[in-house]
Amino acid sequence: MAEENNSQLRALLGQQENLGRQQASDLNKANDIIRKMQDELKALKHRARSAEASLKQQEKLLRDSQLSNDSCRTELQELRTQLAEKTRLLVEVETEKAKAASELDEARKMNEANEKVIEWLHHQINDESLELIATRGYNEKQYNKQDSPILGDLHFPGDDWLGKGRSAAAVGSSSTSPPDFV
Image (cartoon, rainbow, N blue to C red; front, side, top):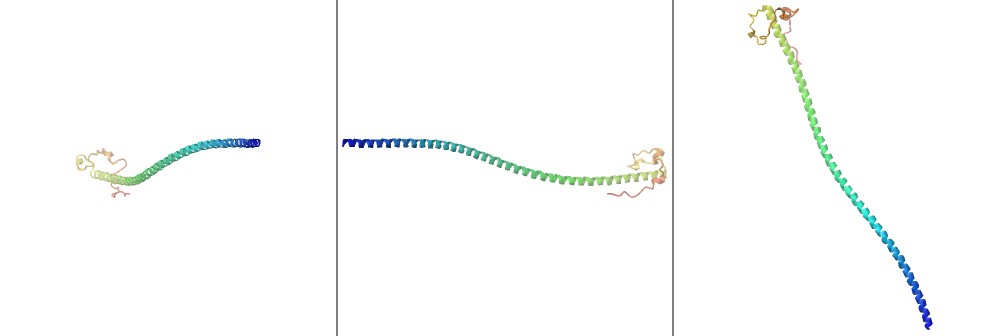
């Protein structure tokens, strides 16, 4: 009986040793799996940190570009306002320029008309003076220069006064009406 007991115990001990070896092998396999999972977890954590850093960098770039975009929009609005003001001023200047050109044109026409009147008046004065000289003759003692403020400073050069080929009759034939005005 003791031998039977001993052999049963040995069989049980062999089974227990096999079971221990089996469990040790299973524990080693489980430890390997845990180590692999820990390595994978470390790699995932590293990738997550990298992704988080990349995400933060992209968010910062997005904020910066939004700020830049807002700044550009503000500057664009300011430039549009300035352009509208400059355009308004340009229209005002163009209007004033057109008005000034019109006034200048009117002034030139008025000046031309005034010059024609002055020329006609000079012609009338010269013709009347020549008629007077032709009918009365020129005598410096009889002619009082103070009588005419326009002719007072004129110097009559003798016979040449009437000009070459011009006679007293031709002098009196000038038009007595002023020139047409514009």
